[in-house]
Image 1 (cartoon, rainbow, N blue to C red):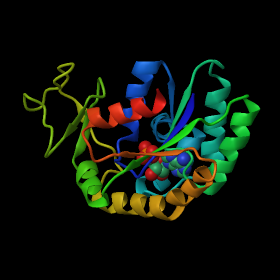
Image 2 (cartoon, protein in one colour):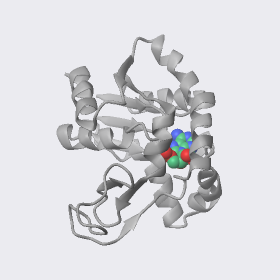
Image 3 (tube, rainbow, N blue to C red):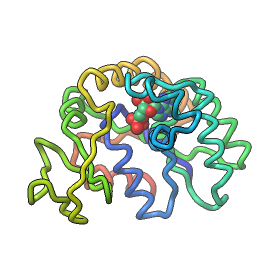
Length: 214
Ligand code: AMP
């Protein structure tokens, strides 16, 4: 199975992708994670994209498509791919077709997480994660049971994404509306799009996705 998870920032693509990895042994291909790793490691790509990401704008199609191509080349043919945060433009959608073909793969489904934009700004601007184990928390909706201590691993170090500020989130939403949402018709024309209510609880969203994949 090769699937795309599509939806605006904060829709829950990353969380749902991780659950698919756990439940089905698929591999999550998140261009956002790959780019953040490049920034952290100060690679040539990381240095190029840092300011663009902090502004909430999209990095070039060539850079992200090359990252995806390299990851797919390194994967076993029998492992399913979950594209999380890619493709985000029409050019990337076309590149993905070519890359998949090159690897003898094809797209099975595009799952769109439908969400309310105002709720997303609230979700994103309060979120933080444990710096050690990655467990997710929220200033207003899910604080650790003991203040300052991760419920899962006991670490006292937490981190926030630098692009999770309200101003940057608004730019990221605009990029989604202007450049990413318009790729849906490409996949609709191929009968690949399924919609899931992304405002439901995380477990309900997972259940809906599982039902689509069975
Ligand atoms: P994400 O973690 O998916 O929200 O991505 C974080 C940031 O990385 C985005 O706001 C963009 O600056 C950049 N980025 C991630 N994926 C892509 C992509 N497919 N195309 C262009 N920019 C991307």
